[in-house]
Length: 95
Image (tube, rainbow, N blue to C red):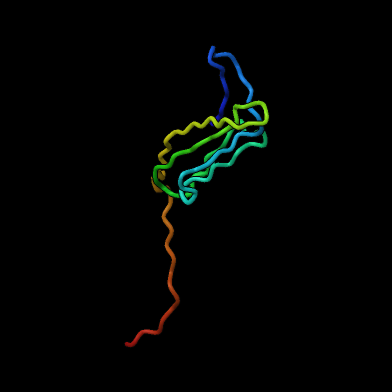
C-alpha cells in the first residue's frame, strides 16, 4: 500500500511528519509501515475483514489538521497443498 498527497488543485502536496498506519484488528492483520511512512505492508495473521487506515498532519505549521484514509481488506486462506499425519505415543494393547 502506498499513500500520496494532493492539494485542492490536484498537485503534489506535503504533510508534516511521518504518516501513521493502523489495522482495525491487529489479531487479523498487522500494518507494518516503511521508515518514511509512505507505504505499508499488510501482514496477514488470520482470516477476516479489516480496515487499514493511514493518518497524517496536513498543517505544515505548529497546528494539527489530520487527514485520514481507510480501505477494507479481506484475508482469505489459500487451499491446502500438503497433508501431515502425526502418530500418537505407542500404547500396549491387550490380546
